[in-house]
Image 1 (spheres, one colour):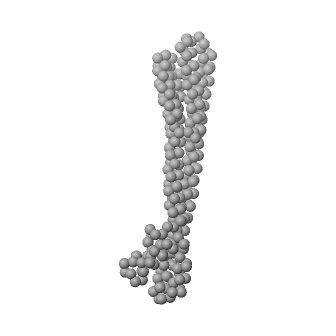
Image 2 (image 1 turned 90 degrees about the vertical axis):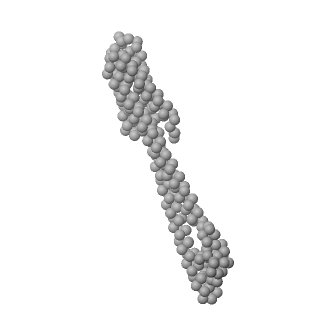
Image 3 (image 1 turned 60 degrees about the vertical axis):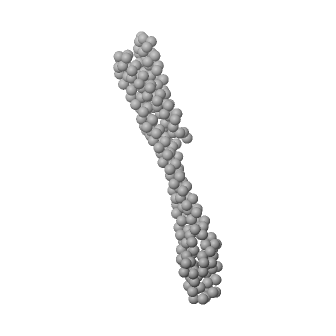
Length: 232
């Protein structure tokens, strides 16, 4: 993008210099010729300024895109870390429940109490609710503590960070689209330069004026498009 924008600006400057030399060498031309050259010079100046602005905005949005993708990756890594810790807690709780069942089934109350004390605080409400169903004697009791009764802080944090990562990634995609929009506008500005350069090759006033009018209409629509694009 910076290279494309720089090319547009250099072309506009070269065309302006050529028009300046042409104006000095053809002062005997009519007033309409002078007006055409003034309009062309102003158009070239506007194209150069608009191109520089587009390059600046495209660069900033590209940087914003990279920043958002980086933040999304960091959030995703943290979410995976919390999810891993939550899975480890779940395995620990499951193993504790199994050992408690064995101790209870063997009538080893002392060992069973040890495993009860080893139940993690966040898992304790679900465990106690399940114990009340008398799983050793009640055939209708759940096979284990219900997941809806167990609220893991690490699992909740993982879900939150995973959602944040997705949002940041979508914002990064949007920033990339904005950068692409500015690049496309720069291509349109290059078309305006091309039309002006072609118009200068014609000595037929109507053809030259027609090309210049078309270039200006295209430039006005491009400026309007630039004004509607988000800025940083």
